[in-house]
Structures are given as structure tokens and as C-alpha cells.
Amino acid sequence: MVRIRFSRSGGFAGLQGPGQKLEVDSKELPAEKGRELERLVAAARLFDQPEKPAVAAVPDGFQYDLAIEDGGRRHSLRVSEGSIPPGLPPLLDWLTRAAREAAGKKK
Amino acid sequence: MCRRASSRVVCSIIPPHILRCLAERGDQRQRDLAFRTLGFSAHLRGQRQVLTSVSFLGTTPTGVKRRTVYTAGNAMSLPGSLVRGEGAAATGDPAADEAYDGAGTAYDFFQAAFNRNSLDDRGLRLDSTVHFGNGYDNAHWNGQQMLYGDGDGTVFKRFTASLDVIGHELTHGITQYEAELNYQGQSGALNEHFSDVFGSLLKQYVAKQTAAQADWLIGRELLEPTVKGVAVRSLKAPGTAYDDPLLGVDPQPDHMKKFVQTEDDNGGVHINSGIPNKAFYNFATGLGGNAWDRPGRIWYVTLCNELSSNATFQDCADKTFKVAKDLYGAAVAKEVRSAWKGVGITVQAVTVSGAAATQTPANKPAAKPAPKQAPAKQKAPAKTTKKAKKK
Image 1: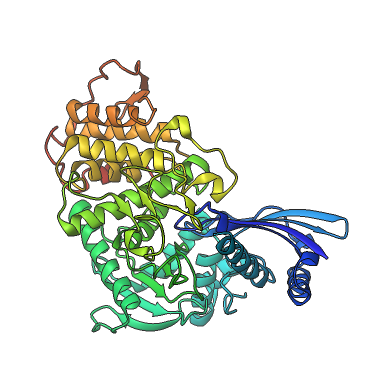
Image 2 (image 1 turned 90 degrees about the vertical axis):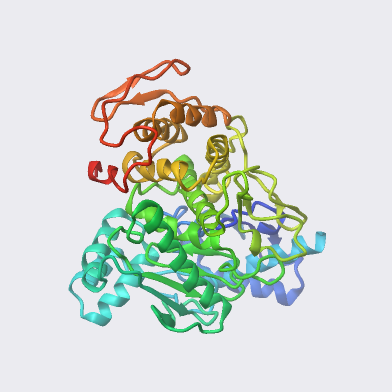
């Protein structure tokens, strides 16, 4: 079971709204969705990723900030569009959509 | 590389030094691949120079407008399939045709207003990829080309729908070849600022609107009707473009006392750009007439000749004041000073061309500039200042 704090910022629009942020705990999700998230987290190998991108961001690219807790282990990292490590894109997509959906429900 | 994945996020795992090697010494296919990947994954000055020297100069005639539009077909493979080259008929796909027409309009604008020959001023071909990603809510400049998403259809429409967005992205390319403003903190917010300014000027030029007539909005055509807002940003009134349950409230400040300290968005590059944006609006409307004329030229010359890659808002204020004085004389420079004062920035230093910076008390008349080739209060001939370029 994993807990993730996620935010996406930047992009051409530079949105800061509720649809860009999410806190999610896999054990609080429906079972299948929780397992899906855990699979994506494992595939992303988040604990092996550096805290900051090695190269400068591309103009109007998205910036993603993640804080993860997984069985007592914690890690925070930032990745920027244009230099996202392999393995992360599916997780970032999942979190982006989930953040949008969660904000849409509150609306 | 996983740019071929159908996901909305891009990445590259080949180290830049290997890509540079391929770019310089590989066969044609390897070179093409390396250029694309370098352009995508690296944004470093030296690598850009490699790209320029080995790629474009060999293939692109100078002084000719050349556009190519590709489609990624909702994947992320770049550049994708060619859908329209220079001179070809309209495709009937609005995204492809808007990208083509918009790039052409932007080329013509920079040529007519500033005598600039494309992004690098050497005729660089303008490449655009449309239908990038699946529901991709963004457009960006990846160091080598423009990328446009279709939007999610709920909040955002396709990103080619606003001409000022196309101008904004192309201006990132110009900045890359000129001031190379670091995309972080204040220099990053200036990078955004210049893109918004020239994006808006492009739209005003096409619509033949004076500063007073223009709406000064960025991305007005992007928002779906359900969104509570008028645009993505406003240079006239930063912080008022939208207030929507999903998007939140337009976070842009319009004054230094509201400057936002944040780690998000590369240190708030799309947020704090509201401050210089408002200063430009103040100046252009205070001066009157067409904003792409004297205001546009002052900002253009500042971007090309005056700013270093780590420039601050203060530097931008000081340099636009200096350029205004050099090109158009003290009265226009006074308007620049007043415009920056309106956002809480006091022009500090007056640099006389060819001389060291002279500290001048903020509100006293500035020292007289050295005689210039361009007579004051008269439109400077195109690119007189280019020759004096420091780089």
C-alpha cells in the first residue's frame, strides 16, 4: 500500500487550481484501482529516481512533484516534461486524470 | 527512449553526450533521431548550438519562410507524419491548418515589424506537430519545434485555436536564440513575459488594433464555454482571467508587492510574469498607438541585445528604459519608467551605450545618452541595434 502526494504545475496555462493536485492512498481506493496504482508505482521505481531533474525544463512543459510513502519508506521527487525518466509516464498520467476527476467531483 | 509510448508524458534515456556524437557523426537517420531527441530532452545552450550548426544551416535556405506541419495522431512520436509542407494546400484539419497559418503569420509579423528572419534570424524552418498526445492540455516549445495538444474537450479546446498561443510558443524559440533566459524564477518569468508580449502583439498586428483597442488576453479561444473565465491570462489585468471551480483562480500578480514565492512551475514562471506583463501594458497604453511599433521594438531590442540569461525584473526595467532612451529619447523613456513604477519597480541604473553603468537616483532625470545612429523620436531603421549585439 502506497500513499502519494501529487501536483502538476506549469504548462502553457500555468494552472494552480484544485484539478492539479491530489493526495491518494491505495488502501482507501476500490481494491482494483488500489492495485492498479501500486502496480504503476512499482513500475515507476520512484525510490530510484533523483530528487530533481538533471536538465533544465522546456518552456511550457509540465512540472510534476511527487511525495511517496511506501511501507515506511519516503521519497520526494520532481520531474519535468522533456526529461521524464522512463517508467514514470503511465503513473503521471494516472495521477493527472485522478486529480482532475477528484476536483470535478468536489465541483 | 519512450517517446513512442502512447502516454502523455515524454522521456529519453540516451545520454546527451551520445546524442551529440550521433548528431555530429552519425548517418542521416541517426542524426535525425539524435536531433529530435536532443531537442526534446536537453535544453542546454551548448547542445542548442550543436543543433544549429550541424542541422539547420545545412538544410534551410535563409530568408525564406518554410513551414512543416506534422501530426502525432494522438501519440507522442515526434515529429510524426507530415501533413502539410510549405506551399501545400489546406488539409481541412483545423489544427494542422491553424498551426501552418499561425506560424506563417508569426514569421511575417517578425519579418515586417523587426526585420527578423525566423526564430534564429537565419531562416530556421518552422516545424509544428499537432494532435500531440491524448487529450493533452498543453502546447510547448521543446527546443526545436512547436507541439500542440487537442485539449481535453472539457476545459481546453485545441491549443492552435488562439493565434497568440502560436506566437507565444514561437517566441520561446526566439528567446532561445537571443537572451536565452533561464527557465526558472524571475528570468523564467521574463521568458514567459516576452512570449506573452509578442503573442499578444502578433494578434494585435493581425487585427490592426491599437493598444487601446486590444483585449490583451492570452488564450481566449482555448477555453471551453463551461469554464468561468475569459482567457488563460490577461496582460491588462493579471489575476482576472478566470475564476473556476476546476481551474482555480488566475494566480497572476500585477504588482511586486504580490510577487509569489513558489517551488511550483519552475518558481512561478507563469505566475509572476503577470508583473512585467502589466508593466508592458501600462507602457503601451500610456504611449498610445500600435503596441507592436515603439513598445514592441523596445522590448524586442532588449530581448536581443540587452538581457543576460539570468536577468531579473529589475534588469528588464533598467534595460527597457535604456533602449527606449537610445531609440526614441527621454520622453518615451519616461513612459517606460512610469510603467514599471506602476508595478512597483523603480528604474535604477541608466547605462549609456558603450559606457559603464551609471547609478542614477531613481527619480532624477537620467544622464544624456551618447549620440546614436538612430535619431530620437523616430522609428529606428530595422535592426540597427543588431550590429551592436554583444554576443
